[in-house]
Image (cartoon, rainbow, N blue to C red; front, side, top):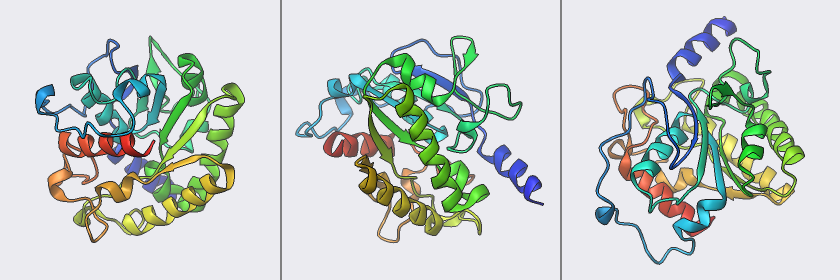
Length: 252
């Protein structure tokens, strides 16, 4: 039964696999498509934010399909996160990021004709500010403790190859109220995020509460910030990506 659930959840959360930087050439995604971008002059960014877009030139983002949308957004909005690099794959999680490259079920980021482990992705860029948002694809399968155990291993592997990296662990983000499941819901997401913050406090890493920046007063993702409210109910649109970027500029 557990194997059946894993297969179903993997199929639900599977989107295009992609590894790239904001300005690099990309292959077309197979499922997740970027929305029509707003003109740069209409971006609405808070220009008083402490971090400039150029600050993120030295940043690399690792994530799943949620961060993949941010990558697309950055391509259309160079004023967002500058020349930040993105290493994303649909259905990527802390746990399967630990799998071997030759595992037939692995979903490691794909770049220049080959799949790469997350720690190798970070090493390839040579960039020092490492922003990680994973866990969404772990919680339902392995629980919050299992997800955290894998998170710690991934961070250790990154620091083993990039010892000078500054680690920024971003919270898992909320879903709309109607999309919640018994095994994956906002209550469990908040439980995981609490453990993630405690881990960051213990190790001296940066914790970024993107969840709270996007949640409504009930702790859910508002439908108007969701690109798939009638489906999975957890992916972002351009408006929520702009809010995410503004949060990063003010809090990174």
